[in-house]
Length: 527
Image (cartoon, rainbow, N blue to C red; front, side, top):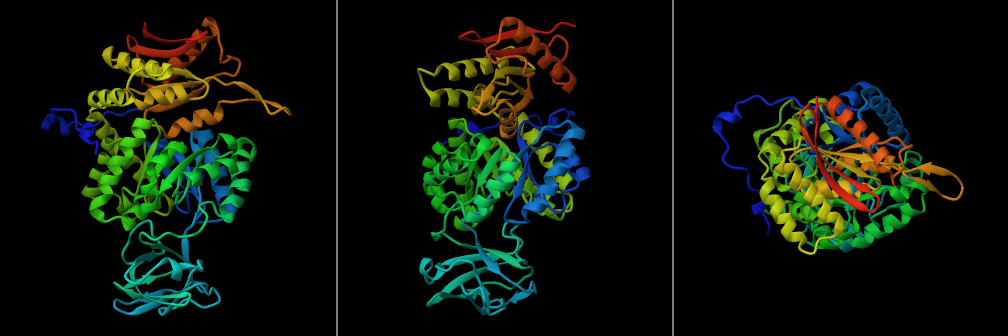
């Protein structure tokens, strides 16, 4: 278990804790993914989310239809235009999610020590004694003593709207369960999670494929969040599906680890995926509570060493209904940053919460404070040791750029890139200053028409800690001369000055390709 790289910078002066935080153009180096929904679908609210620090908008297809998501996305585009804040789009699949269907929508009261039967017969009406589910083989998957968690808001953990069940008996296709505590379920649909039980359903359902091939293709999604990823093959199949859908061959796949099955195959999944989402809501059901933090630390360490973005979910649940997080939640956000998280994903807090903008702002402030005490020196040494020697050419350049920037106390690292890979490698070494990723477009063709690449690559850096993209003028070719490089650099420096991250007499580290050579140079700005 690797955890010593998580230590804080020492010493921390107690008096410094009371010093007010300084305002910054970037709320934090850690990124924030916000789920858009009923409480966060207007142009006004989304503009507030972007200004507060949201850089990726998540569209959860477990809730709402494509038309509703389309309206929200149109509002997102308007908000991006008005705020001039870039935002990436993530489509979150439903996956093999077990659901209880309550056609009437009437509230169902479940009382402690009573019994309830789960049946695959969807013709039956839901009641306190009988609940129809969308999975015909549950009776073959569970056994006496297994635990099942069920609720309308599975991802908020509110005990008044969710319930624990214990399997008592299997009767043909039906499963009889004991109710462990009293709860009231209201609404037409509840999710159901059988703890540490294999569910024989495809990871990418037909419903998911339909959403991706229509809504996803139309809107050129940047990220696909692959729910309930259990094996590396799940990622490979999803990638093969995306490869046949026009521009979506560029879409990055983030494997969502939600159960013990995904945990068991984590290393193989990490190799195949572009990034990882630790879905702590479901993991907290599948794992004993005392084991969740261990998985978080181990998984984030492995993602960090692989140079792949890691996203942590379920951090400030109480802000769904409250203006401030609990002390435990605030500490949890900070620890996720110190553990090495690239981004924090907010679900119900922004989807249906009362304070979506305040939640983004609060999480951003906590992340920024945690970043100040992150032990970068120790982290850098561990990463270099893990990579080993001989380093690849790009890895060597990236680590050298970060080392140089720290030694000369540079205010920013500027990286010229066309694929985004060089910038992501620099970010892998967790520099203490922002990395301005200048994406140089490339001219490409599908043998029918010509177009420029770059937009995908720029937006996909919005989930990587410390990376802030800027799309260069397409008239500057990727294989540029010194003259065009200098021209783009001037634009990047002006962008940095306007953002307030570069001032006169600051030092800036520049990483760029000149001909066949990769160059790291240090420049000092004049008045």
